[in-house]
Every structure is written in structure tokens, then in C-alpha cells.
Length: 521
Image (cartoon, rainbow, N blue to C red; front, side, top):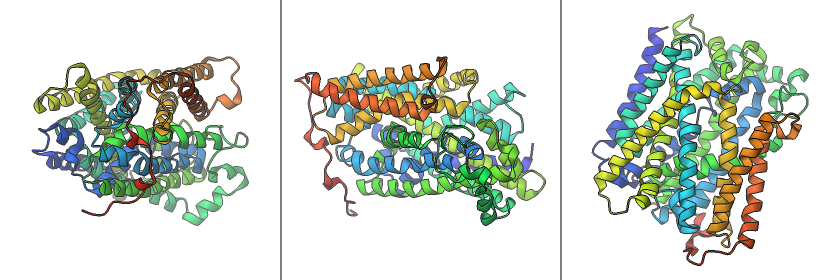
């Protein structure tokens, strides 16, 4: 354990928390301030926060490990979110912002039906806790205990548990009190920390590999021809994890759900001071995705050739790479490793706070408002938001031990869950804006059938005795689930009678007028 390393991590964490609390001071007693930052966020805060929130554990901490094993193909998943961000900024966001909606769930009620909104919330709440919060807290404990303190998860479970509790405590202190305002500004600072730490790791990896030219030449060797591909073919690669069909399925369904439909991302954009700020923020987030892809790919390409020990289980490859590249023999190595650990924690914290604010808004504004009545004071709304965010954090931490039961690794668990929940939600949202005829009963049917189809494919691939090769990649199953959801929605719209009491807002249909960038006020 190094004092310098822990000091770097501690200072970055204090800065992260202090900025979030300072930004939200005296701005958390009104529901719009707490849940939507008072709709006052500037474009650069929105962009940095959206990019930081999108930089989930599987996009950097584990994706660097994936790049160590599979090469450049891992970066394809970071590039895949660019289309989704474009759809969010120029497809969904103009309507959501102009109508002053609280999030995607409220849109579903206006576009489809109250039942669609309720079903969306019931699907998203467990997905956020089990599929986002619990894995993020797991990764926070893993980063702090393994990379920071040098204790493996299996070596000292109590230290790992204490690290998970520390990550949860930091998130509770800032986010539960300050709401979205604190989460956004802390996420913006965290993104800057991530860019610094990730750049240190990438630069050190390329330098130790002999430079960029030598590294690329080495990866061009016949035995490593797959490492420079944007996808992995079924033959001649370590494992058919990222075939081009799987990458396409990720772009159309999983990435669309994570970046364009998820309340985590949408809520941050709705907190912008204007539609112009929201769109400029998304543009900045898209540019940062290109940087994220480079910070994922460069260390991986260096490790493929020069650090064979980094290859292995994806969950361990990132640690092996950091130890091999930076080491702890010198002051620079210790400082560099501290920045890398701080960057990983910043990515994890952005995920945790994003999930907390999304859960609090879904629970308070979308579920409790209908179940418990709409005539509630501002103080009670904010109180419910704080209690629900803390409850989600506790539930997520309680579920962390269960992740050890998943033998295939954390990355596989996150992808499997995304392949079940994401495709039907993405289909329902996309069709809602571009096909006015779709209605609420068909949307509800699509969500139910789509999730069930995803579960059946998951079980079939996991427990089947003779599983077809095309069904093995999880992203293939996401594509099948998305295609099935689209078919169900089309057939349901044509065959199921529409509820005559449904209120359809004609403004919800996408228009070319939404493309323009509004003028500065």
C-alpha cells in the first residue's frame, strides 16, 4: 500500500464531493431543483456529466480488460453509443425538453398510456438497482481494494466489503443530499479526473510498448490480425464475443437503451438551462466518446503484444495491465497508478450517482405521484427522493455478494441483463417517435413479450445442452430480442384495437424542425 497513491485517490475524491455539494448548496429544497437541477445546467456540465455517466464500469474499467484480451474490437462498443446520442439529442430530447417533462416515463404516458408508464418504471427500477448500482458498487470495491490497497477480492472479503461501503458512503453524502445538481457537477469533475487518469495509462502503455508505430506494426502481424479489427470473426479470434452482427445489435438496441432511453442519461439532459445547452452538451459527450474509445483501445493493443500476462479473465486483465505498465518502483509510477485508480473510481461514482438520481425520480415523480396522489408538498417530494435514493443504494450494496455467484464474470452479467431489458425498451421508444399509429396496448404487449423473449434466449443459451454457435454471443441474443420486439409491436398495433381513451399528443411525432440548434437566448 502506498501513501502517495492513497493521497492522490483521496484528494480526487474530496474534490469530487466538494464540487458537487457546493454546486447544490441551497438548491435542493424544491422538487425541480432536486430532480432536474432547476433546469439551469450549462452545456459543458451536461456534456461532461453525460460522458462520465456513459463511462460505466463496462465501458472503461472492464472494457480496458476486454481490449487486453480482444484488441480494438472492444472500442466498437464505445463508438456504438454515438448513434444513440444523436437519436437522443435530435430525436427524443426536443419533445421532452419543450414539454418540460420529468423523464422518459412521463413521455410514455403522454404518447401511449398510463399502463405503459407504470410498466416502464417497474422494469427500470430493478434494472437500475441490479444491473447498474450493484455492479458499479462491486467495481468500486474491486478498484479500491485490489488496485488501490493491493488486496484481492478473494484474499480479504472484509476489506472488499469495507471498500464497497466506502464507495456507497461517498455517493450517499453527495448525491442523496444534493440531487441531480450535485450528481452532474461531481460527474463533470469525475470525467476530467477520468480523462487525466485514462490518458496517463494509455500514454504509459504506448511508451512502454516502444511507441505508437511499433505497437501498430506488432499488432499487424499475422498471428494478431484480429487485434486491429473492429469486430471479431467467428474463426481466427480468441472467442466469438464481438462479431460484426453483435456489434450492430449493440448499436441498434443495447447502446440505444443505455444512451438514449435510460433515465440516467435523459435526466441529465433535461436539467440543461435550454434546449441549446442540452444539444451542445450531447455534442460534447459524443466527441468525448471518441476519446473514450482511444483510451480503451490503446492500452489493450499494447497489452496484446507486450504484456501477455494481461490476457486472461477480463475482470483481472485491467489490473494486470496497470501493474505491468506503471508499477510501483518510482514516484512517477505511484502517482500514475493513483491517477488511474482515481479515474476508475470516478467512472464508478458517476454510474452510482446517475443510478441513484434516476431511481429517486422514477420512484417519486412517476410511481408515488400516481399511487399516493399528486397533491404533495415540495418538501415531501424532496424527502421521498432522498429516501428512495438511499434505499436504492442500500439494496444495490446488499446485492453485491450475489454477483460472486455469477461465474462468467461481471461484464457478462451486465451484458446479459442489458440484452433482456434494453431491446424492447429501445424499440418502444424509437417507434413511438417515428410511427404515430403505434398505441399503448401494443406497447405494453411488446414490453412484456420482449422481456420474456430475452429471458428465454438467456436460459436457452446458458442451460441448453447443444447451443447453436450463433446463439452464444450475448449481443446476438440482444439483436434477436430487439427484432422480436419490433415484430410484436408492429403486429400488435395492427391487430389489437386501440384503447379509445388513450390521449395521443400529435406533437410527439418526430419533425425535421427538431434538427436545428436553437439560437442563444
